[in-house]
Length: 219
Image (cartoon, rainbow, N blue to C red; front, top):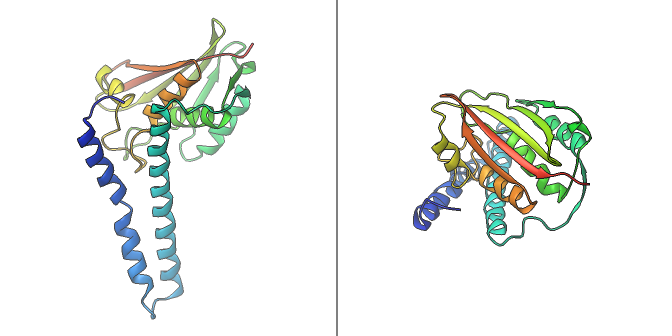
């Protein structure tokens, strides 16, 4: 991962990891009140559960970054049915389901890889959101090109530029809408590289980014 500097990144990491602690501490303090009603108690337990999940997701992202730098993101390889993978990913993205189009015979493609990591890659791309206030469905087109899977994901965002997409692929998102560490695309690019492919992008207008994923197809 390139810029920011190591110190700036560690400061950012410390700040983000502290984020869930304040609501968790408040919830624990309030739960000690003997006069707390059952409904309030359940609400506070829900706060704790959300923040624990958020903190766990941050730790997973940081752990994946370390594995990426050590070349340990791909630990196994097995045939992956592309259509089933896409269907499962779309089903998990119920709040803002992506629109996915298969071109030609791309629907029958298979990939050799670590199914958990490839699923993580597709989830990061098809579920990508760059705005907290106005989530927009990703539009994706999948095709077979020179015995390689090629997926083009169109994402709408304000102030799109080549510099912005280059930054998102190499450095943490400055204000991630999912309250994580903002490393989703950095890790997605590392997963693509680990599987003999690549992930790159460009601006295709003032409000549109295109991310292009390429992976070798299984024989």
